[in-house]
Image 1 (tube, protein in one colour):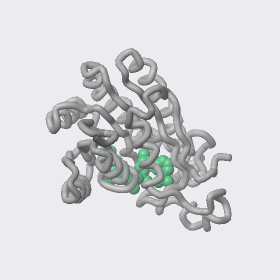
Image 2 (image 1 turned 180 degrees about the vertical axis):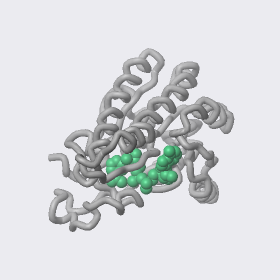
Image 3 (image 1 turned 90 degrees about the vertical axis):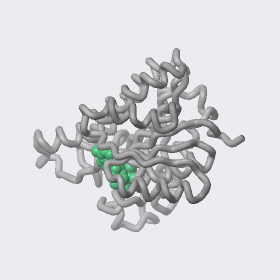
Image 4 (image 1 turned 45 degrees about the vertical axis):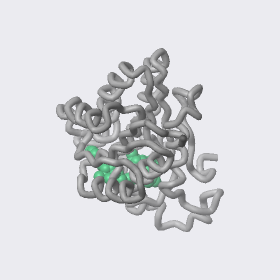
Length: 247
Ligand SMILES: NC(=O)c1ccc[n+]([C@@H]2O[C@H](COP(=O)([O-])OP(=O)(O)OC[C@H]3O[C@@H](n4cnc5c(N)ncnc54)[C@H](O)[C@@H]3O)[C@@H](O)[C@H]2O)c1
């Protein structure tokens, strides 16, 4: 028996970066995983690789910002393995628009993709978890939620701060059903997204106490903890994964 044997996990944004590493980590500990990503080819590549290593993975084309399609997509995800025990909300974008150049449209786009989608995907999965009387919700926030946007912009930081509260709201509603809800605040993580941000051009030894950027696997380890029963008495909380950058 492994930590997540018989558990089914859906990971949004599972096609690369933190989502991919999280899916691989959960699969390594026995979970069946659903890679839900708008980039189906990328999700399929990850699923094939997990299956080749003896895991059980499926790819699902899922654009989380197509709101009307969320209930049907979540229903389809459930059909793949018959249940959803773990939801890891990772899909998202970043932005680097200077504060005085943010427009109504750019603000709305960020809120739609990084916050609104996360609420409504979680709401749809939450209904399944309530039926099961079991669930683990893990939401990807950011260091920017705690200290404002620096490399990333204000709309991103505000969306990520909203995620911390979204997580608490599901924690409160989910507690009677044995559903926990927690968030993770990654610092500077060298993924395809991270490489587009200005911090990736700076020597990490000069500003990160641990002297290196984070890896997607560093974040995946925190996901594993919140996705497993090791965190059963922890809800409405968040974990920093930043090599000491928040101090
Ligand atoms: N990289 C960092 O330094 C860092 C720091 C803090 C928080 N985060 C957060 O972690 C999450 C993942 O970041 P990453 O660095 O792995 O990003 P990434 O850009 O490398 O990967 C994001 C994945 O999400 C998918 N995606 C994007 N929009 C989607 C949508 N509408 N529907 C479905 N899938 C979608 C992409 O196709 C991609 O596979 C994001 O929410 C990001 O804000 C990242």
